[in-house]
Length: 310
Image (cartoon, rainbow, N blue to C red; front, side):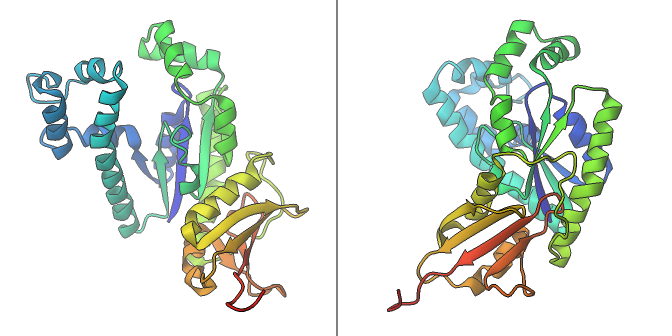
């Protein structure tokens, strides 16, 4: 199953992209909804929150009083850490369950709608990261006009999040939402047609991508090599000493140095699930090709020397 991280600043239109992707057949996990669900009435996390902060954080109907809790934690870093220590494990457990359910149901693509994906440095956890980008002034206007936020509050919320430069560095795909809703839908449809659907099929069949050009919605960027290296390093974990991009004229070339004792055979399945298929046609050994049709990626594993050999 293809795992896609979807993010964007508040007011960017990320929810509109998520809705369209759901219409096209993806399973969408909404991080904000999950965060609300785990502290709903009757949930263990809500009981833990009440035990830690007192019954004053509950409404008369027994549901969480979010404004009251906010007044307690957001002016107190220690209290905020305590709250996160309660809610974050519950959120990740629920998210993992939703992913398992989607995979069990045969879903081809799962989209994680994650507002703080960049802030939480979660980009390496996905096959692909999509960022919805909208100019700051447009976002501020939307928040004031559509959500009724005071402009000062809207701008404060935007300043508290990652900036556009940080999001672009994490993004495999940037969707420009400074136009009409129809134009945004066209971009999403094209992304689905040219990249997400074929990427998911390549993952399912273990087929490397066979294109060297870049789609218009995914022009080359200076962060691509480092971003992909981080993703492979996340997949290999402690099995690899380091993963680095190397100079190349044919897309992105990565080298992963295995730690002593690391066996390549143990990694084939992990790499295939991450979108890298062993190239059995290459004269060079230990070479894997990426399944993403939007970018040409070649990964070479560098085995550790056998004991007693240089």
